[in-house]
Amino acid sequence: MIITLFALDKLIQENQAKIDSCRRQLKDLDSGTITLSAMKIASIENTLEEATKDLEIYQKIYDDIPQEKKDKQKELLRVQEALAKETYYKLQKMRIKRSKNITRDQKLEAMMILDELDDEVHIDDKELIEISKIIIKNNIREVTELESELGIIRDEFHKQIDSLEEHKDLKHLAFLDTYIPIVILHFSILVQNIQETIEQYNEKITEDKNSDEKIELKQFRGLPNYEDWWIEELFKNHQAYLGLYQWKNIISNECITQQQKQIWEKIFSNWLMVKKILNNKDENGYEYHFIFDQMIEKYAQLDEELDKDNLLSLEKIIMNITSKVDFTKTNTRHNITTAYSQYKTKRLEDSAN
Image 1 (tube, helix red, strand yellow):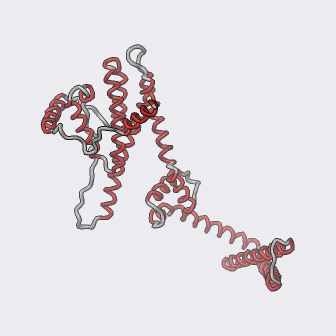
Image 2 (cartoon, rainbow, N blue to C red):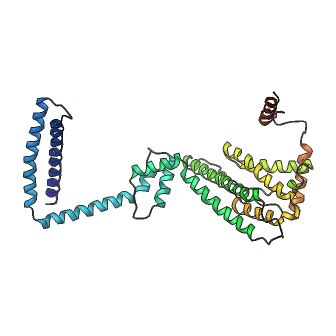
Image 3 (cartoon, rainbow, N blue to C red):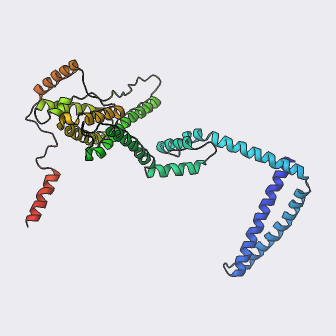
């Protein structure tokens, strides 16, 4: 009986669809929307007649079956559809992960979308991938996450600044109040990005390696400690400059991609600018300076070397490096005129004319 009811239901739906299609075509013909040959019109009328007769036959057979049987069949179909749907969504992550028709980025984004959804909310595979593509194309997740993370850092920084006692220290430096949270965020993102790149690299070579092949996984050693005297004496002695330069290069070597290296160049310049401004405030800016250092340590794991023995040891290393430096050499990309100096020269020449 189950199979009979299922077949009858399908036959009723098919014949009703034929009838609707034929009536629509004949209506368009009468209104002049379409034109058809006499043979085509006869075929449509014949199909309509036969489908109408068949519908009446199958509908009568269906109607003669007791309602109790039909209700039981409907409930069974409902349960089967529910189970099939549950299985479909239950295996969705596995299906997406194994698919060869979507990129790795789309797979990862799809997984994150599924993790975000409430248990009662479901999205079919096709729509899920389309949503993933839009998120990736417009960089929605990163922008949203960065705005959220910047808000957290900014609120924490301002809260600490506001807690300083009045007249005890520099409580606010208008420009830095806005700029410092951004510097902290960028530093934090760089460190996270380096760690993620190393993890992805290790995962890939582990998957690709042969069973007997020995592989060496990359490790993130963390950011080396910097020394405050490098910044304090910057532009006053070359050893301070070279110490800072060597430290900068060590972190640059921790960067995996060329993009990370370029980003580090900008972050270093911004961080150094903030440190130099705060160092120039001397004891008047110690509390403000301390808050900046503490937050950099918290969000980017960057710390200052405070152990005196380590400071003396590193100073000897810097002196040894300094003694081996050939100060007659310049950077391979060295140019006595910069892009800005050329622009400035042109502007001055134009204004003089």
